[in-house]
Length: 231
Image (cartoon, rainbow, N blue to C red):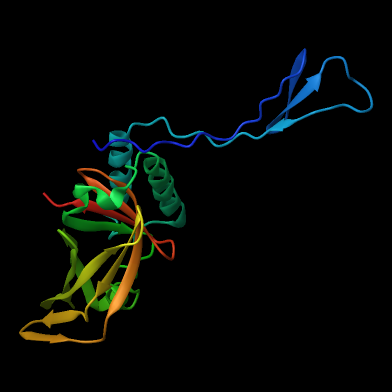
């Protein structure tokens, strides 16, 4: 398993005073000097941050995969179920390596098994109308050293004709977590036809977790992606 990120401890107030009494009030703690009960009472509030998950990375990986598999890459999930996926993704983020863009684990072949926004991967082919005509069979991303990314969506048109849309792009590292991929015009293959359409496009993605099994990413507009390494 990849090494864990260094965690930043939550800030805390250090109070030095003789004979202090801690009194809980709603979600904060009040520190009261025992010798001051009337006017001029001095108190300080200690904010309490949400605790980090105590689950192990392997357990969290198994949990997020169990929530997204067999859901048509997230299309079939309810809003509440999407929220649960996002919660596990946040828990996994605390175990991310310090500079995931430099991690050699990013290279390889990946299945796109989930996206919080169905149209983010696949564009119009994955929209509500597009899914009526194009049944997605596979969504694959290949990342090749040093900087090549290939995306492919294979589909069945009305259950009669097989086809695929593919893109190839160049990966640019923006910082220790963010990457940018500039894609050439997509290539469409349907039956015996093959042609390109449109123009260049680009995406930006933050790598929030990676290991031997999965990779998590968040797009510049907040879409969450789950990639599973192909065997």
